[in-house]
Length: 400
Image 1: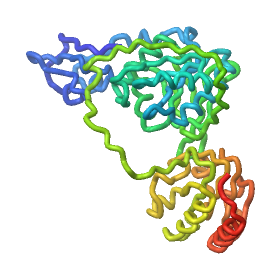
Image 2: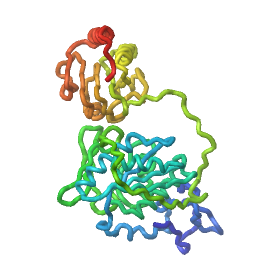
Image 3: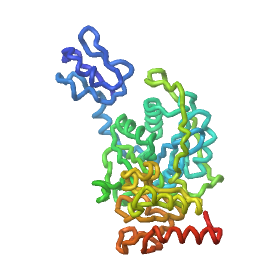
Image 4: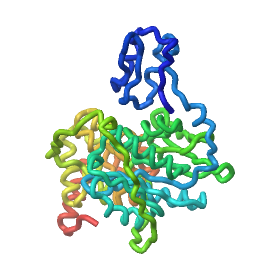
């Protein structure tokens, strides 16, 4: 798809100049001219009062033969030479989808000196790994990554592409969808294949988590989804798995880099690693105040656990946002999840229900949290937690 100006219709009003987010339109002798910064995003098309700006090639893409697309692809997100946990989780989901479709799993790996990670991607389920190993791709930047992954998709033609719903995935996936004129379903919690049509069923919460919507992209390819970390389960690593590693020829120029990274300053604040935690102790509104989290922290210290919180505790400024578990927070899958004073709204349950063992402590015997708990304790958490902490210390128990 290419954005063009019909010179005969242009009146030189300059409205398009202000509508372009990339400074990709110049005025030359009273006419709008598209320069090489254009990403074909289409932001300038609708504002033009004369309909002098068009996007050529869009109809041809819409009429593409979807039967020529095969394979399930995963964007392999890595940082500082380490694969993100959501990447291996997505490869597990991709294997299940590929099995239902009778096809292969692809992985798209970007970065500098990252080829060594390709073997890990194969071990976690990829049949083919496309590697874009280029010094200029060391750090994520939207436009060059978009260009390269679009080139990869056009070459490998997968029917499905999955991204982690991380800061990077949520930024990259919409750009790719726009370039390819296809759909994108964000924050999916379930992915299945329709037995009859072989289309991808993409399920995600809607209307604040009160309903689950299932979305399809029947007439376009690839079908694309972002999936929140912790939702899918990775498969065991198999270093003996065979797979093909493909060096992808990267074609990026200065035009593809509208920004330049001068310096990277890392925050010294220790982040909360809820997604990979084996034990999480979470507090809710039932704590009564910010002081209540001292009990939660003490129990977490004894167990070697991470501390989580429900949305009301974050909104009341009892704990920071990076501790939030739930639909608008983080999705977790620990071996043990202890919910203290959490009523268990559907939004919170959506973020912790995949946990292996759930223990709920709440003085309300009909609290919704008990419907998903494996073990429930009805009572005042301020009386129960000190006893539990003391017992664990006495017996020297903690961790898994």
